Amino acid sequence: MAKRNIFRGLAAVLALGMCMTGLAGCGSEKRADGKTEIEVVSYKPEAVKAFEKIEKRFNETHDDIHLTISSPNEAMTILKTRFIREDYPDIIAIGGDINYSNFLDADLFDDISDLDEVQTVKQAYLDMDKELEFIPKDGTYALPYVANAAGILYNKDLFEENGWKVPTTWQEFTTLCDEIKQSGTLPLYLGFKDTWTCLAPWNALAVGLTDSDTCNQVNMGNTTFSDTYGPVAEKMRALLDYAEKNPYAYGYNDACTAFARGEAAMYPIGSYAIPQIKSVNPDMNIGSFTFPANDNESDNVLNSGIDLQFSVMKACKNKEAAYEVLKYLYDDETIQIYLDDQGGIACKDGDFAIPETLKDMRPYIENNRMADYQDHHYPSEMSVDAMIQTFLLDTSDNAQEKFLKKFDSDWKRYNRDLIRKVQDYQKEQEDAQ
Image (cartoon, rainbow, N blue to C red; front, side, top):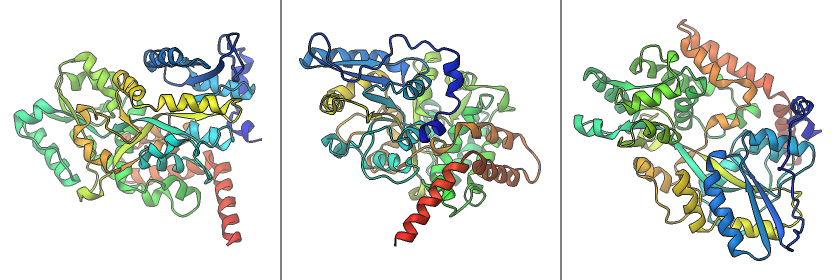
């Protein structure tokens, strides 16, 4: 029943007769050469070159295991379809988001807490995975690999030329925006035509202004979004005073291009936008700082989420071989191959270089002052990005109240089964005490 609930809607995909040729699960069967086959399916097609290099190096150094890593387009759709068919790969590489939560809830992943490498993961990322569990589970079900960070990108040359300092509090941030505005430069570029971009500053503000487990607290009935998200909504709207006119007319690519050309001093977006910006201006000197959402710097939290992690499927027939693959993937040299190609922050403790563009975030990373993207807990059907855009477009006096009430009502609508499940679990725990 759980699988049917989670993967409902995929029947339509199957009805279209999607071709899965070349993606059939190997199931750790022995190959003709006697090696055990381990198949990894990754959701990151942009990292295919890095994975090809890693796969080649692994296979050249292992006589008893053959590793195949595939990074297909529309990997999530392919994986869900394969799961329905009970055609499982051995390991999947996915992000720390709602898909991971759903797959874990469907009991598809094996507990890997006996893998030594788990002990070398930064605690903040293990905590993030725990908060992605709908119902608390004993054990560890993913090996966090690489994370990203989102705050505010800034033009370091413009800052240096004008003597502008990186702000550490909300007051310093708004004062800086006023100063930049008075100088004739646009403080922020938003590019909210693509609704998903609304989530970038929203998430970066929310981690500093609300508890990291807000969504779970709402599910348990301990709070509401109306009670918790007010400051986030208020400060989100305040950004409009410092942005381009009609930010809903310009999309992500427009914003990246404008920022690359020096049309704005700052851009509230994640580090994932840097390659796009540098494609326009390869020589741009970009920095990134934690969104100063609070009146006290000590209350600020870096918005960082798991961009890639590995989970072993329960259906994997050779856990020993799968573990050998994970051990190789978690070797420092292997992680560096991935970082050199894709950038990001290593989830493993160790002497890994933090990209120069994230230098201002270093104290937060090194001291585990990080929290996950809140939208990793939002159901896609709820379309929170569009809700935020609609709220920002609404100039009525009660716009914020309407927005937060809708957030609460839509949350109940799209999470009805989950809320019931969480509250039933909560009651069971109380009765057991």
